Length: 261
Image 1 (tube, rainbow, N blue to C red):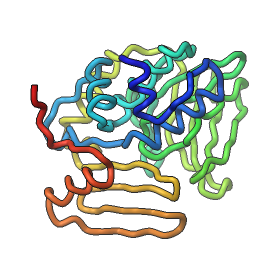
Image 2 (cartoon, rainbow, N blue to C red):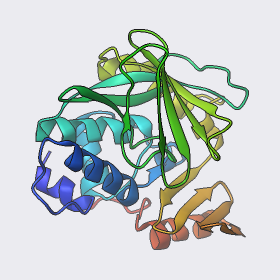
Image 3 (cartoon, helix red, strand yellow):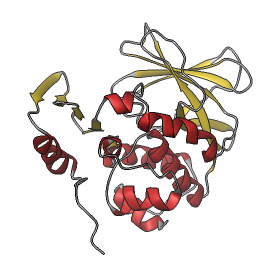
Image 4 (tube, one colour):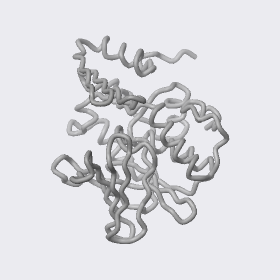
């Protein structure tokens, strides 16, 4: 993995330092530069969750990815810069706040001096800068982001719950996470499930999304949605050809291009 190429891909032009300012800037730039997308699943391309394959796909070929791909690659960037971090398992809540299985989502736990942070550039639509993690049980940390208000509650020694709210009054649980260090092979069963199971959200839905300075662009199945502040534009897509044309023109990705050696 070439550090300069990675930083250039996300538009980070300074020399990175092992500090909170660099962490915040890298996190935000990564989210604004690299789409969250599951298009390879729908193109029947097996996902390769190893650092060389991810670097080739996301940095060299300028693609996006979903949680396991984006967060695992970003974790390696942080380690290369010198941050003290490790990957962790998170469990997603559905709309009824039923909790998903272990290794449902891959997040990053990071320490800087006496503070700890939840890092996540692979959720699709979440906080732009890392969330500080409370140190004491039954304590929480709340922060207003651009689009939402986020809260982290400490449940016990290593377990936490991330929640989100539009108004800061009623919070909806997003996911639970455990700060125990994990290895990438522990996620393989769920990675495989999410790309082949008929019950998988990613098999059921073709998605590509990225925030913009004014709002967000999202391709979801046959809809192309652009938001700008409180304004929303929605266009119905008529064909696969039109879908992938939008992917190329709006997200700057040519996912159908064959490699020529």
